[in-house]
Length: 329
Image 1 (cartoon, rainbow, N blue to C red):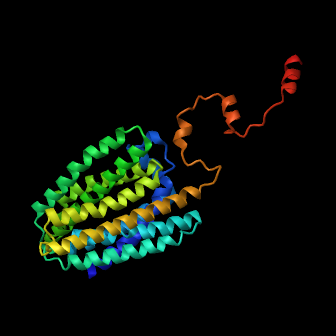
Image 2: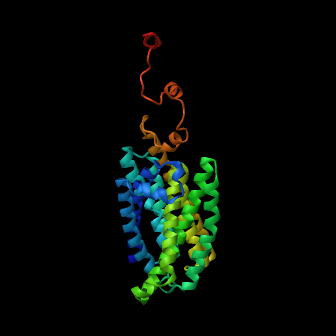
Image 3: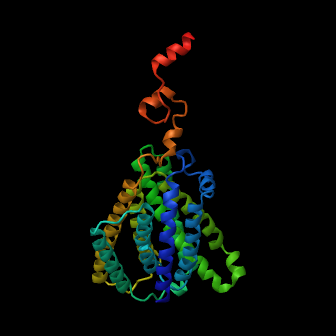
């Protein structure tokens, strides 16, 4: 129960942090995508720094939850951070969510509660073998790398957003596994934990996960990125926890079928909520607020006359008669 409460607190902190970061990352130029320069630009923005601070608190409570709880159960609770993200994003956009969203929220809470009940108490979380945790992290990392590379090389915006979001969700799962390994190494003392492999692997995976998430947000396609990351993370976590870590070996065939059905309901409702929240955020954009500075940077040498005809520059038009008089004078 303590692990689930810590996971719930982590979901609140993560959800608020993601809402702040997403709002700011969508304004980063496209040429900085996937590069350290992107994080440098974001680190100068107070709104993004606030989100980063909240996510840091979320990581601390998340690590504490993984220390005593199973990966599948903790990550399922953590997926509810989307509910907090939606609430914060709606507040920033000064928009209210449609009424049907409350049905989706009810479905998510019910499905997650049923999954946690079916998973039952975990007898393996407190004594996970480091080798098995390393194998789980390696498998998720190997799957993530080619998907992330394909996303960075994609030319179409929607394909790029989808691939990067899938990679970000898998990277989150990999980082969660490494966090679990690091917290278990703390049982041997701080010195042993700092010198163990999970500590350094977690730093690499954490930076990769952060960069992939911000790159996915930078595509400014929240209708794709938010639902995808939200769906991939719990699905991959449950798969890793059940198949690789053997956290729920007591599950029988009937329980597995019911759990998969509840998981499908939860993921569908989460994706629905994410798309609704993203649509609300897009509608809330002001007509004169261009959230895509990358498009302006792609054509820096465009003629002023053409820009004037398109109405992109607020320069007043000079009458031809006045120009003629100036030339003759």
